[in-house]
Structures are given as C-alpha cells and as structure tokens.
Length: 371
Image (tube, rainbow, N blue to C red; front, side):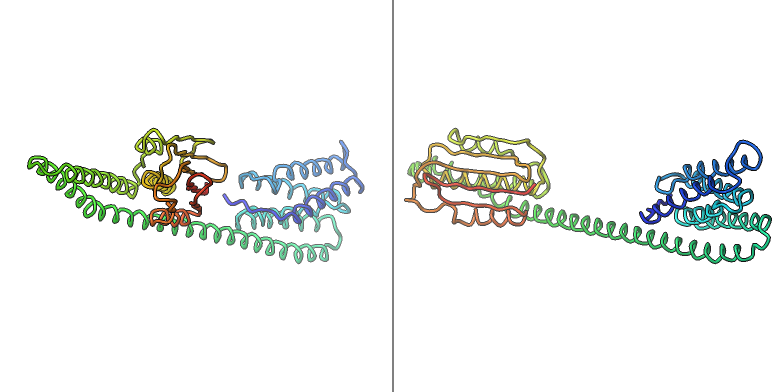
C-alpha cells in the first residue's frame, strides 16, 4: 500500500474549500431542511461531510475505504448540483479529483474522477439552460489538476524509492566491509596460530627440556634460574598469542578483573557507571592497554599500589591505570615504548584517545573510547 504525504498547502486548501462549500450550502436556496427540496440538500450535505471524514487525506487508511469515501463525496456533489444549482456543491468534484489523484493508484483514481465528472456534467445539463460554458470550464480545470497531482505523486514515489535504494546500497557496502574485515582477521588468526603460536609452543618445550637437562647435570643454579625465567616468558607469550588469536576470531576476551589478579594484590580495580556491552574492538583495546600499562608498572615502577579504574560514561568508556611510586630506573618514562604507541594508534583508529605521562608521584595511563 502506498501512502504519499499530502503537502501542507494542499491540506489547507482542501479544508478551506470544504468549509466554503458547507457555508455556501446554508446561504443559498433551497436551504437544508427535513422536507421538500431542502431534504435533498440535507442529504447531499450529510453525504459530503461523511465522505470527507471517511476519506480524510492525511490519515493512513486502506485504498478501499478511501475510494468509498471519495465516491460518497462525488455522489453528494452531483446531488447538490442538481437540487441547489446556485450553490458551491459542485466544487466537491475538485476535492474528489485531487484526493484520488494523490492517494489512489492510477486506474481507481481515474475511474472515480471520471465518474464524478460525468455525473457533474449530467446534473449541470439537466438543471442549467446553457451548461456549455460551465462544462468546458470544469473539464479544462479538472484535467490539468489531475495530471499535476499525479505528477507530484510520481515524483514523491520515485524520490522515496531512490532513498530506499541508497539506504540498501549503504547497508550492502557496510556488510561487504564487515565481511572483508572478518575474513582478514580470520586469515591473521590462522597465520598467528600456524607460525607464532607453534613457534612459542616449541620454544617452551625446548626450554623445559633444557631446564631439566641442566638440573640433572648439576648446572649452576643461576643458569637454571635464567632458563626457568625464559621458560616462563615463553609460556606467557604463548598465552598472549592464543588470547590474541581468540580476539581476532571474535571470541570473548578475558576480563580486566582477571588481568588485575594476575599482577597481584597491589592492583586495586574499581568500576563505575552502568556497565554495557562493548564492541569486540573496544574490548580488545581496553584489555591490551591495561595489560601494557600494568606490565610497564611491574617493570619500571617501585609503587606498592596501582589503581585500575574502568568508568562507563554516558558518551564513552574510560580506562585509567595509575601508580603512585618512584620509577626504578631513575625516572625514565614508561610511556615512550612501542607498546603504548601501538595502543595510542589503536585508540585513534576507534575514534578515541590515549594519554600517558608522569604525575606528581607516579605515572598515569588514560584511555577513552567513544560509546
């Protein structure tokens, strides 16, 4: 069903025309009454009002209901022309033609308009001595109105169809881009799994073998300890590689609370605001930023307490990692490495920002991502 909006100006003209017709009916003889010719005027007036209410042009309704209402208006207009030729009842034909042309398909609109005009011509021929001028004026004014309104309807329909096609094209492009991104992430995940994860797994096994061999042969304890540290780092790297692969495949990232637990009791985590579901890219950015910041703290800071805050703000999500303590390397910046540089680039790609720098008594990393 096609519902084409009626311009405000046409609505106003229609209401004024209808009101004028009603006022004229009461001002011209024979006036509405309950007997004689006045009874027919009353019937025509009632039909005009009821038909207008039924086919109200600015209310969405079925085409059948609107068509019936227009037929009632047309019949009432013809009746008023026949019983009150000096009145303005004949103007109802214009209302019928305009509404039918704008709100109905072509053939129903043409049929109703033609029947109404033919009825009006017949009524004028019967009650007017020389109806030629009135009939000519009616035809030469009605036909252009009908064609003009149909053109407006078609233009509006074409515009709506074009807007719909543009919206479908935009959605199709977005879906294609999402599919391409998913395919690329899957390819990267496979490559990381086949190369990096396998290499780290093999390295961890080799280091474990080296540790056992060194212990069996009575190697220096410092060497054994160094091998154990290397084995631990290889195992941690393997875990991080697997987490990165899971993130690329769209799997759920570990929570920040689990990350905080890994770094010990000195990390105090707090959450404020109303928690909400975040996109996978945003979850990865939050996790990686917190991980990098806490790793830097463990390597470079002698702080006994680290604050990890996650704030759900109305327009975005804010992550703050702040330690309060002196740097172990004499004050060197922990924000100048490649890790936080990568996090800053990731934040900018998501429309956010990352700031990292020293405070009065420590170091602070702050990430903000839009909602």
